[in-house]
Length: 319
Image (cartoon, rainbow, N blue to C red; front, top):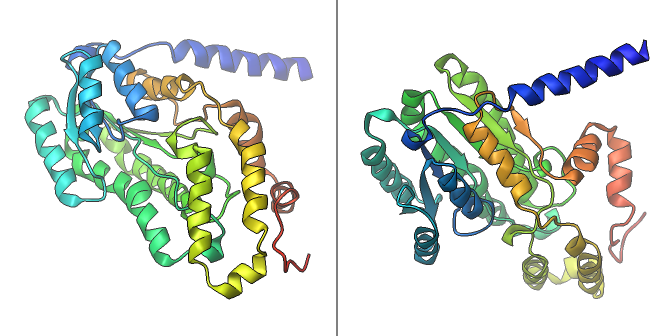
């Protein structure tokens, strides 16, 4: 019996692998709009899709990002300035894209822009801390997507949202996980809503990768800034040496966790854009596949135990 089950599992993966090999034709006439192209996944994806023959519209936050992309890509790539938190900026980008794509419509939008700070203990945060990140990581995704939906429908194209494994489980405090859970929810509802129009909505859930979002120095600096703003009573609860202990843990453990091979994520993004039969969800990174996602399905008491056992405890901890 077990041999039959194993054979069926192997057959399933072989058939899926073969089915996913097919790519969409006529790439030279298909436009892909990517946000957050100054660096990291977005920058690498823009270059990669340009080499694959797509017409790329790379949205950058800085002029430097735009200039560097133009120098390294073909004339099929266009750049546009975009601040996903500003409605007027989103509208200007859409106007530019409409003139570019004409009656063809927009084949795909890849919502990649995101930030990772502020990040820290929930009781260190203010409502504004949550709002500032949600504006980029969640509101930005929703705003950009809604702005181009008519063009996506026209092309019967696809929406690719970059969430995170932290949209499945919350090992850290602050707004990051909240924003990524929101992206997951938006993606699910959008996928079902746009199904009748032949539009595919896909989600990328990366594990830890070495980008500006996971930069250890940036995260440590952020924690220190939050600490300085805390009231005296809260600092006393955590203890004067709490920050130094957290910094040590981050330098010893967290700095070693990110995977430097960004192509693992970019390959998933490219497949979501170019495959005739893309997957609904992609989980690039061994940590995502074999730790974070399985842990998200584990009983709460078990995941809590694993995530809390090595945490730095506050000075006035009662446990």
